[in-house]
Amino acid sequence: MRLLPLCLLALMLTGCVHEYHPISSGPVHSQPSREPARKPTPRPAPVKVYTDAADLVSKPFRDLGEVAGDDCQSSRQDSPPNLATARKRLQVKASYLKANAVLLHKCEIVSSTPGCYRQAICQGSALKVNQ
Image (cartoon, rainbow, N blue to C red; front, side):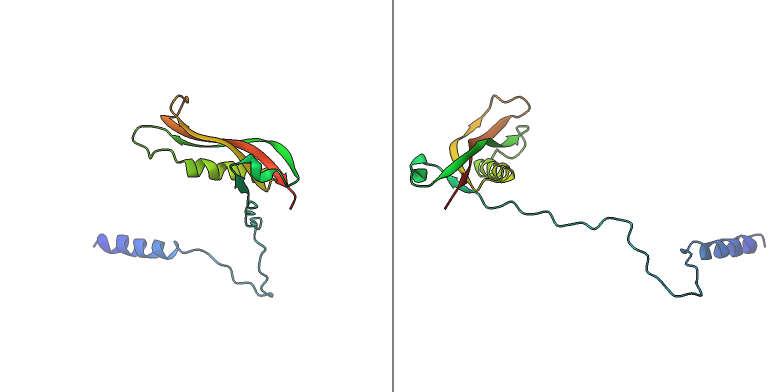
């Protein structure tokens, strides 16, 4: 007999769990979203990689500064560092400087970097080449 009132109480409380939506008598207005609209992140402009300075002899260009990209292998169990990833990061950093080309100085894998078991590093000069 004591079980029946407890079951009824539990049943009544489950009806209160649902989200409350008041019914308004006036016109329905959609509320503006409180979160700011997200813009898609702009893709960096394509950056051409020059490996030989002789390719730039006949083209006018401006040097925007040195850039570097890296890929770190934190421990022996992690995937090995990739020179292609380091080169891509070099291109992305050059695009942040509004460069459209990079003169690649060197890409190498080193093992004497603190915090990395091994590291791929690419270094170059960011350039603005006029076509």
